[in-house]
Length: 160
Image (cartoon, rainbow, N blue to C red):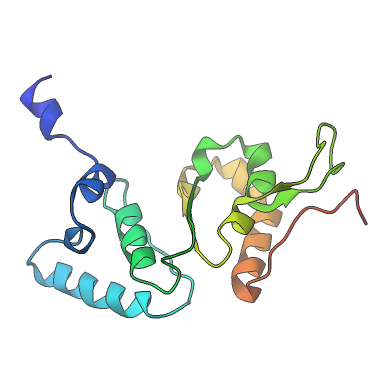
């Protein structure tokens, strides 16, 4: 392994290698501001939007907030939205009931339900195909409603 390969680590790998309170390192004014804000945010139960270019540490920051929040004893559920086939994203997020579609032989909780009282980290939304994002407005609308009302949803289309 070359020296370059050894020094290239992802922010998640770095976060896992450091003690939890040392993950947010740096002495710049910007990092001091980040630490101040995430400390405030961790003390609340409001939804948080972290955005920025790939590799800037959004997941590290989300995990830090989770570990310093009241939800720290609950699940941290990461969903890489871009890695899930577009047509399956809604079922993956919200789950489904037995009989909701062909092959649904048993109910399956969605990631939203699995993260109940914990943290749901949606990664890669910007990487979804634009056509799919437009076609799946219903899924994202349901997510917005979920975040607003803190309710859990399941597809009950065959049950009603």
